[in-house]
Structure formats: C-alpha cells, structure tokens
Amino acid sequence: MQVPALVTRPAGTALAAGFARLAARRGGEGVHTRGLPLTGTLELRPRARVAGVPLLDGPGSYPVTARSSWGVGPVPGLPDVPGLGLRLHDADGRGGVQDLLLDGSLAAPHDRVLVLRRDLAGWYGTPLRLRLRGRDGAKVNVTVRLRGRRVGLDTIAAAGGIEGMLLV
Image (cartoon, rainbow, N blue to C red; front, top):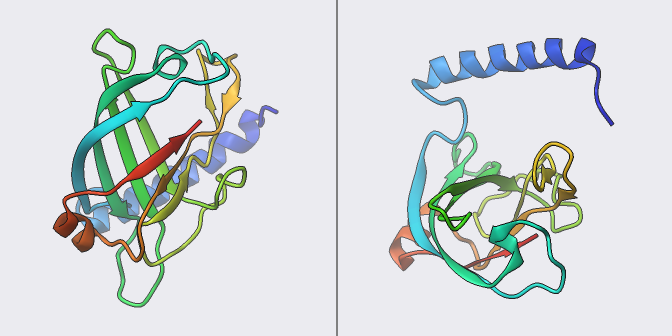
C-alpha cells in the first residue's frame, strides 16, 4: 500500500521540524545521542531458502561494528526505547557495507511495535520492513535478540560485549 503524498509530505515536514528542534536543544542529534560502540563478528549459517542476496544466501563470517544506545535518556526510573545500530562490513563480498538500524520491539512477527523498557537486552526490530534487491523486492523482517538479563550500557562495557542473534 502506498500512502499518498498529500499525507506523507505534511507529516514528514512536521516530524522533521520537531526532530530539528529537539536536536538543537540537545546540541546534536535528537535521539540516541549517547551510545556504546562495539565490534564483533556476525556468523551466518546456511539457510534452507535462497533470498537472492549475497549476504543472506550462504554461510559466512562478517566483521560488525555496532552501537547500542537509549532513545532519549536514560532518565532514572523511566523506561526508554533502546536502539541498536549494526554495520556489517564486506556484506556484498566486494567491500560494501550494510547498515541496520533497529529499535527495541516485541518479538517477531510483532517486531514493528516499539516498546519502552529499562534494559538493553531483548528484541529489536525495524519499524518499517526492508526490501530485498531494491524497491520492488520482497519485504523481509529483520530482528535481533540481545541475550542477557538487565543489560545496560555500563554492564555491556564491563562485560566486554554482548551476544545477539540476527533473524531474517
């Protein structure tokens, strides 16, 4: 379903103005201003179905740069939307990168529903579906689950990292 420009333009303009004001008040970005940079490796196992995308179609090991952050705060005692940014290096086998921006969500298949919580462990999803191979490609769910209990930026740093699982 395509939403008419008569709706998307004014909504986009209002959102852009709101985030610009928030960013100006916060001295930079509007949300996810502070985070913890991480590095690691994404290990992909063979899949039963071929997606037609080099990154997903075979087993492989890819270097990952990640950043875990809180949307607004954290404000002590209040829940927030956690964020997870993943950059997969050499995702296409030719030196290209694939960026994935995910927010705290419910478990798949409800991963487009953002949730407020007090720790970084749990499910992350994309509010909008991603498309394989361009604009007319199939829509896919991309979700990540970070394992752990009561995980915060400070405990991730102390532990030297986190373990997660990427589901497509």
